[in-house]
Length: 255
Image (cartoon, rainbow, N blue to C red; front, side, top):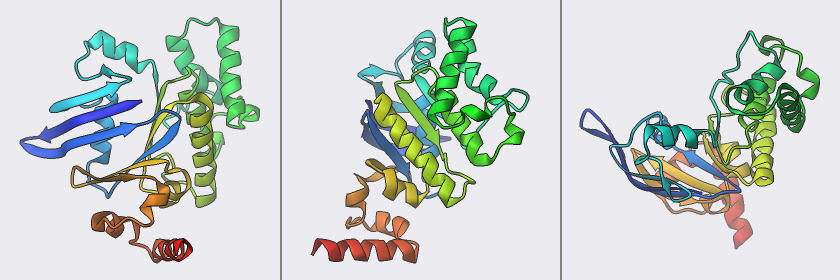
């Protein structure tokens, strides 16, 4: 579990994050949503230590990440897996070598054990047959799946995903969502996904925090989001006619 308490982040005396309080549960897909410029990317960067909060706490199972020494933060980061907006694979490495990279860097396994573990992760994302290919030889969706396999290779307790469906078609996005949700349940990770994909919100949004102008304007789940009376949230979610229709159908169903 990750808990945020009274988190503030300022740049040049401008508050970008304002008194954020949130709990991200383990074994659940936790989503951060919001418009571009709302502060959701800054929030995730504060969570993983790419930015230092101006004030407040970030607690990893009651361990205050903000107050840790540099060495303690390095050790905690070994418990994290990250999936970037671009797959961020190494073009000169094969698919297998990309997944093995964290194992080569941080594990004490021998080569045979590292190879076996990487192959297990590729099998989990249904890409074992592509292990000898290079990133330029596979599709964007496959690259994202390789990135997922790499992120889980060290059995992380915490999994961070920054716009994992960016640039993908709707069908492939559903595959990625299903993978992330399945892995979260299987490994009981604390998974946090930064997204603007409303299909992801309605598909795997078990715990959602809506950031609006740097504030946590709403929290809930995918069922509650359809009937929320929060105007800021509704303006964001139901900007398209499709989701207005979904909401209206859900309300009729509840009557």
